[in-house]
Image (tube, rainbow, N blue to C red; front, top):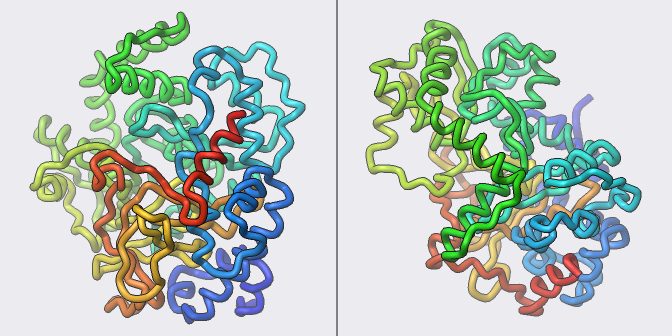
Length: 465
């Protein structure tokens, strides 16, 4: 049955039932009206279910959404997802962590039994065992990890997010016939990539472990992310590092892994490159990982000789890594696949399932179940949705129903609202020159609410109170 605009007005999940080509062919004026319609509905519903959203709305004096500009005031700062108190983790006050997390989800966490919980992973294990919540962790340059309140309700949307990265090659991935290669240092865990691997294993490969090839085995959990962040914080602030006995033991495990780095890379190159010579594979990873694989292959005088119908997806920005000027030439000297025609590029983030796909003209086209907007980083005011505008990326994912997905991200982006990309896709597009605002503003990424400058600070205080 054909999906109509009426269907899209009825339920934004109907966007998912359209192919990417069909989505990009939709009249954007109509899409924009549908997006605003669901923005209003989601705000009306979740305001009564999320005290944090209700409190922010009161603070900025917004009773109902009237335009996309309201996202500049109602988008939670990306720092909100790490606004818990560091001391609550260091001192094992996980009942406080639970109350903090409750402020971000509609799921009831009041009955979670925390007996025996001694670490972040213990706590998250308890949350996941006793509720539908499945928090996604993300490491940050500040040292604290972010925790995004996804749940089993949103799992299908994240899987769709991953499948959309492959565009016309989606059927290849869904067939489960081809090895899935990812240079991630673990087979499971709590970061986005690890969650993706778990979904691939369960929903695509039927738990056939041999079909997923990663840099190393094991579980990359929140405890590792936390310890790494703790080290970064101490180094940045010049503080004395104080570790618990459990953190000391974990640090020794990580150090032991680091000593075996050359052996792990040898094994990975053998399994992912040498053993796959002439075979069709599917690759997914950050640009940093693809570059690292290229360097390791050069050390061993090995070229990647996957079949030419293999599909590669890369993205993720620099992840704090400074690339040399010739890094792409290095990648292409090892990987015999042309960029961008054979190496697909995507722009994605944990905050939204509406991935943006790079076209042959070099522009990034967002999928329409996600709202994009731009605000002035200095004033917090929404910028016009006309012409070419550069500023802080604001996003709103219309699919999640158990948390507020409106977010003021840390990305510095430029959007051409007039569209007209030569690739033929309709609607606005993002220029492929995304940076972190902390980098472009000398390390400062203070997020200001246009209506009430202290509103976001008061919201974080409320969540941790």
